[in-house]
Length: 191
Image 1 (cartoon, rainbow, N blue to C red):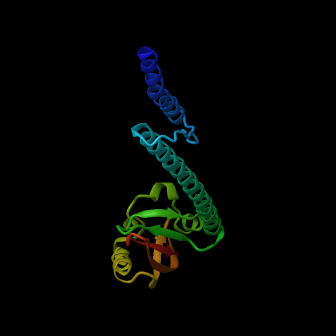
Image 2 (image 1 turned 60 degrees about the horizontal axis):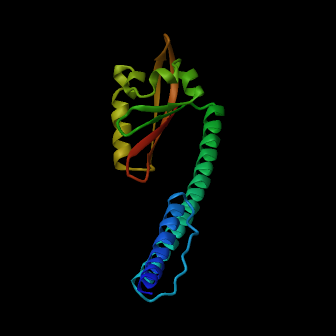
Image 3 (image 1 turned 180 degrees about the vertical axis):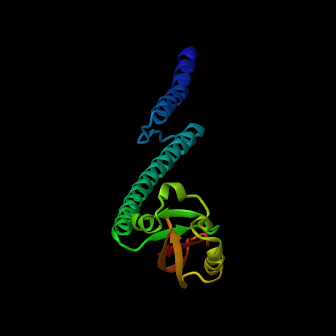
């Protein structure tokens, strides 16, 4: 009888542990819906309750992450659509547009600016805006840079005679200072 009782007690102790081991394997494979049932009030019952709470927390965390991921994907799609819209506008206007970062380096240039200046954007992106100007006009870049640093949203405008491929081109240059969320100044220059 004592042997039978010992086997019975061992089985009652090992069955919940085996069930928990199997449930842990299912969770490891991604099945977070696993829950164990054990109404015992002893240490094993407490362990089963803790396991179920952990599984619920994991399931809720996964649901939150999935929801946030969908939201980020939706926001990314909106930003991409806006980016394509702005690019389409910039490529189809007749004003030349050149954007500069806070260091005066060219970040973008539309086709109209390429045509007006007789230069290709791929050669200038990442280069200093000073390369576009004759030595007598290089002070203009400093003026624009000071504007970007001191007055976001303000506008600077000058008439400039610029030599392009041996011909003098009369330009009205307008610069607008912009700031992003991290307070990095940048600017748009329209020619």
